[in-house]
Amino acid sequence: AQSVTQLDSQVPVFEEAPVELRCNYSSSVSVYLFWYVQYPNQGLQLLLKYLSGSTLVKGINGFEAEFNKSQTSFHLRKPSVHISDTAEYFCAVSDQYSSASKIIFGSGTRLSIRP
Amino acid sequence: GAVVSQHPSWVICKSGTSVKIECRSLDFQATTMFWYRQFPKQSLMLMATSNEGSKATYEQGVEKDKFLINHASLTLSTLTVTSAHPEDSSFYICSARRTGTTQYFGPGTRLTVL
Image (spheres, chains in turn red, yellow):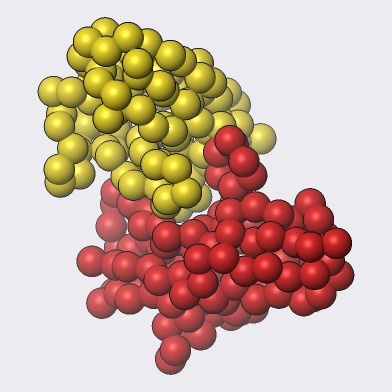
């Protein structure tokens, strides 16, 4: 079984400052990793995903994440945030070998941008 | 591409009635669809996995007789909340997966049971 831990429930940052949202996972098998963003009263939008290959993954809206197998982490970063980045961010993991491909979500991190 | 819609976007119903929520993949065929439930300020909890033409697989603790799932075609899955009660009020989100690993999420349906 897999699990995901998002260490920060809320992260307040000033506009144009850099941000890192932390995510650690636990699994006995190889996994796929995802970051999703949810704006208020909306569904989820995929920011980026790691399936294999380069450990640095670039996504939409200027976000990137780095897969670190030894530390079982997949932290999300953005060098300069905007007001429009205010949202809930979910890290998620999926078992590479399961045909069901269920996604397990972390508890979420609320990113609030201050002007 | 890969757009998933849900209908209705919000619904209010009386306690004891049943509510049906539709999930459609608009521009692709979804071999598998997933139903999630999200309480306010919480994460998504997987309720069930549905494959076209077969019975849904429910997660532990989810009442299959209360949350009826039908995946009648490769583009449509429905979730029916039977005999709804106020504690069923929640945000229900579906996702659809074609081949591969990526799930595409619908915009969600907010259910309020009075």
